[in-house]
Amino acid sequence: MTTLTQKERDQLQQKTDETEIHTAQPFNPNDHTIEIKNKSGKPGDYLPVQWRLVWFREQCPQGTIETSMTHLDLDRDTEAEGWKWDDAARKSVKFVKKAQGMAVFFARITDGKGGSATGTKSETAASFPDYIEKAETGAIGRALAGLGYGTQFAPELDEENRIVDSPVNRPMISMGNVDRSAHANH
Image (tube, rainbow, N blue to C red; front, top):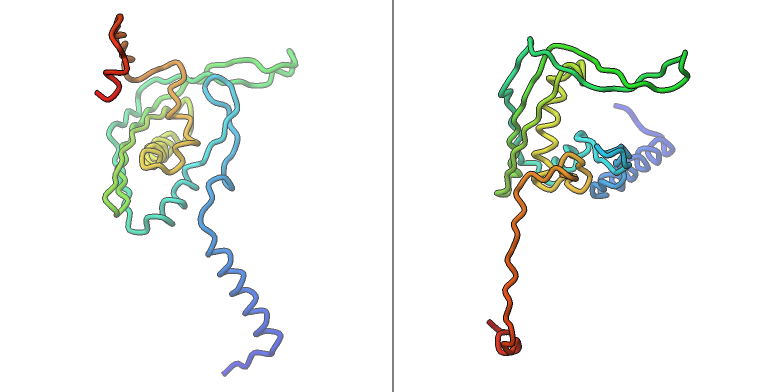
């Protein structure tokens, strides 16, 4: 049998108190955002998928995450633009990286409370050496954003000038000389 000294008991109690204080704090996504450039080059906040998962698990311990690879093409030629430093020119220069491989993943997430969302993501070997893992992580991140976990920090949901649905032009209805107050409650 081990007997603790008063000092050891005090230290243990302090660690327990600190743990309770730390775990009592709800997840704050703002504590984990990083700044990245969006597709137009402007900086913006981003919540990495790992932190979206922490947030989701805190809020939805009964939630489920299922992923599946929907497409894998190890022979597909892919290209990605990048920048590298040119010592001779003493500036960054654009280059095109070529590699073979493309993967597409699908993720379905349920929160255990009746909510669910899906996400799909593709990646190429030219963009990432671990493109298969990146595609799966990206699909999870998109599904989490669909459930509201990190939506405000998800640049992949910012359409910018690439609107994914069709804008609708609503015709203006002219009421001419009609008394508008008569139609206010209709």
